[in-house]
Length: 300
Image (cartoon, rainbow, N blue to C red; front, top):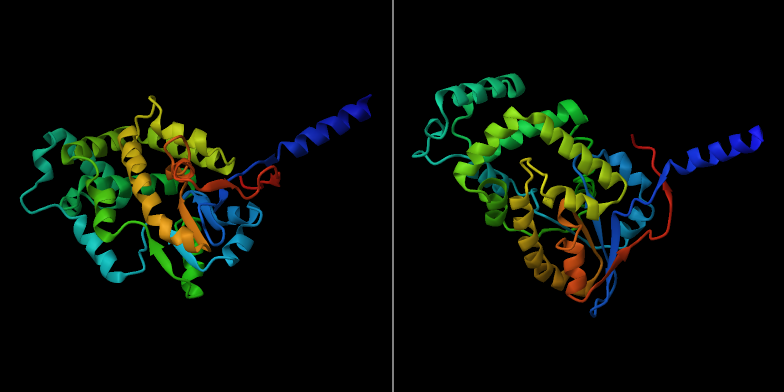
């Protein structure tokens, strides 16, 4: 009896290491010449996770083009983005905070970034929020942009001279990064992130865990749900959903030719309003590449 119980415990323990990590999808139908693929990514997951996704390299090898949110290889585009992060000369952060709030933000930025508002006061609040959040994730989630899976296939495409296409142009990218929320709300959000950093970490940890399990629908609800009070908010999710509809139209000529490998943040893909469902609604067949297959996940 003890032997049987031991064997059962061993089997259950082994199964607990397995998960259906459905983050890779194939796109076909609607007159496409060949299949294309879409990979959900998460910037806070290390690139070793890619090795746990069956057939991902095989799918990538079948493609002749990489499509992503925006292509940042253009140095002029990067310079334009840096310029877009600056406040107009007529706008002063001191006009949007009390003296005590301003000092509080200044102190937090000095501790986290090594720079205070005397050096950063010309930057838009959305930019400061992202800088602060990035440092939080480095400290609490072990984030390292050199080890992140997010841009792995773009880097491989660059090395192999495979064309990389951005779904957003530079103007749209600047809007999404710095101006998708009203300025006064950006100011409130910066203060809130600094006051309650634990909420940001908890949110991103939950999203990362759901991603590793391939639960893209749950991940979408984590963002759009009523209990979400983080900087990645319901208002952001609504903007993403509206953009998904535009992305479907822009993807159509690439999908018609086939052989496209799409890499996008998982937040954009799952749920009823996510890009996967929007593609289905447009008449494409979208299904998991590794449907019904269990894979071993050794990422902690």
